[in-house]
Image 1 (cartoon, helix red, strand yellow):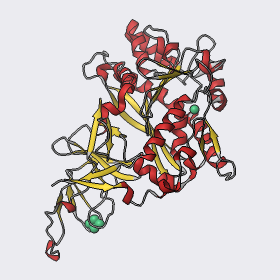
Image 2 (cartoon, helix red, strand yellow; image 1 turned 60 degrees about the horizontal axis):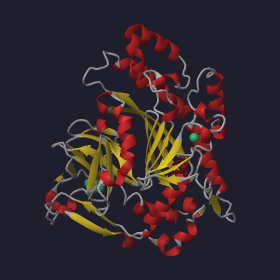
Image 3 (cartoon, protein in one colour; image 1 turned 90 degrees about the horizontal axis):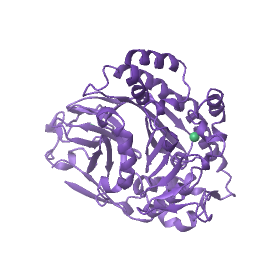
Image 4 (tube, helix red, strand yellow; image 1 turned 45 degrees about the vertical axis):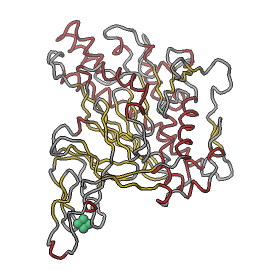
Length: 458
Ligand code: FES
Ligand SMILES: [Fe+2]
């Protein structure tokens, strides 16, 4: 059963009447209000986080029937689960009686959820299972309106689960489009083309969610904002460029580029800097305490195969950004989660190698132990620099009389930004071309009127 919810009657469109989006988002600049206005934020929860495919979680987080995690779709709390038949579902975490959340745990396994308030219980299909003392009700509890609302479209791309409330959104594969190529490459370097999601670094900053997406492919800030991390890496990188030290010097002439791939998605590729040989990736891995010890013991145990093993522990030098809330960077899955107009959660999930075919000769635990070390670095020593920037931008944007945020680096220079034969826009690493392109897509979405729907079991 599909319920149509007309966005324009949902009360969230006051911003739409108030603003001229072409005024707020121009070719070279955007108005501060897109980061500071609560009405725009509220409209985004429908026009962006309701209407496009939003990343919710990874299949390895709910591998078995009845497994669940609690997540969010914009501000909507959800229970992402595999029901007792194995079907993926994203239930609104909201009791149909008086609206309280049904599940307060981060993860677990449950065939049904009992509401903590008055004890109504629901199967993990969303269907109402039982109501305490039903003889106090005159209604027919078989009416589908009492079943939990759920997101009508939930799909997975190679383990990454996305969902949308928009029946008119393109198929997930079409939405992802060419960004599937770097996602495939990121997965295919892992044994069996798979990863498992591990624990996460959970961070929150006091700033708008788009500040994180603006930064997700920003190669311009690195040498300035991450100066201390680069200095540390440069001190220890006398032989090769390691970690982010390939940003030292002139990043636009270094072997890396940015590609805008449509629907707001973009890709920063630093892999051309890597030597194509076993051990090439490990050779540029940033310094970590104890890494030499691990490398030495793996080389002793595994001989020539050790270089491949070390590559699996190394971070892939890519930023693959899927609008609006998902990034693959290094070995991490990063998820942006809006909290309010000026508050955002940023979660960095580590990923582990899985070796179902046994091709790693028993090295899987060592790889994952070392991988944990390599995955500790950026969220602890780099991301804090970024979050400080986001908070300080939000503070700066409180200057009401100064309207504009510029994103025009690379604009108007002949030959600098080019569109290839597949329509992919390619630019130097420090350009803001991806920002201009994704914000155009944002503007297009803010102008449309999506007809969002929820579904209930019949
Ligand atoms: S609010 Fe859930 S049973 Fe009353
Ligand atoms: Fe950064």
